[in-house]
Amino acid sequence: MSVRALTRASKAIVRDTLAEVAWRVGVSAPSRTCRGELVIATFHRVLPAELRAQYAFPELVVTPEELAFFLRFFREHFTVTTLGDAHRRMRLGERPARPLLAVTFDDGQRDNFEYGKPVLDEHGVKASFYVTVDATEADAPLWHDRVGFAIEGLRRRDPSRAAALLANRPLPVALEEAKRMSTSEREAWVERVESEAGRARPSWDGMMSWDQLRTLHAEGHEIGSHTRTHPILPRCDDARLETEIVGSRARLREELGAAVDTFCYPNGDHDVRVRDVVRRAGYVLGVTTDWGRNPPSVGAYELRRFDIQSETSRGRDGRLSRARLALRFSGLQPGLTGRAG
Ligand SMILES: [Zn+2]
Image (cartoon, rainbow, N blue to C red; front, side, top):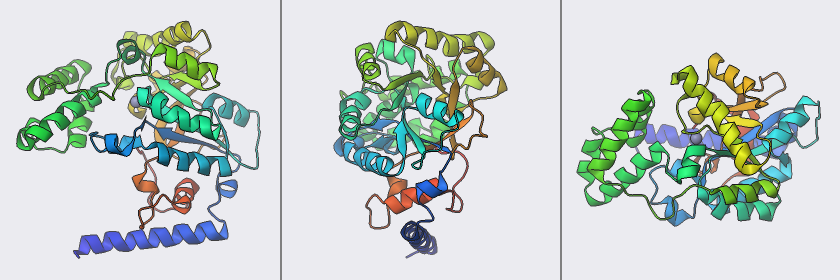
């Protein structure tokens, strides 16, 4: 075993032992660590394991079985409700014995409805779904998925050409670089990747339809805005911000025939100017991708979340672990801060 592998293994032993002990003696119990605070869980896609195995971004996926594990844990230890409701109750000073937790899904993927909703129904959980309006209207994949599908397709046929197309960078690194491009530069890059690798959208991919979103809303789930086109908002000019933030709200209200009060920043990116537009547009809150819980002192337009990933919720034995999940929520685990997903 290399020194690095040994270090990693011993870190995992320390982490799991800490998690188990903290869980057994109750110091990481959410009723203790999250009392009076709002906890927000982030999910993206829900896909069966065999489809996750074909997807370029498996860290964005939980399987229906994994989602059921997370929902059981949430139901046992939290008061689970939509984000709008949870936030309102915290503002009113409610401090339930089981702390408030909201389940959020970003991007509006169709798998949320097909594979996620049955699990939510089974556990009686109402969630908040953040919809990218133009992608919904066109049933079009988001730009990172267009790249992921094209590269994954090419990789299966010709791995070295796929690597060369990304200038031998890992896909996540290439995408991070693309996020720093202007919108038009990025679009040009995505189109070049697609034209060289070939478009390859799998049949299981798609966005939720307006009918599916109306069904979710009618059943008590919350639908919020995730903009029109999923841009990096601080890079947008004022007119574009208006379209993305104000325009998406108007379009969602029109289609759903209901109020749309909550907003989710694409990629978690926001600044003072962006937050001002979100507030003026009439949203009551905005969620980021900053990692952590929300005591009442956290600003309504800078709410933090916990990005829930299967890989970081398992113990060394490979099984999903309540103790590890509780430790992540507790803030007691060293080195777990900053941004996540
Ligand atoms: Zn997103």
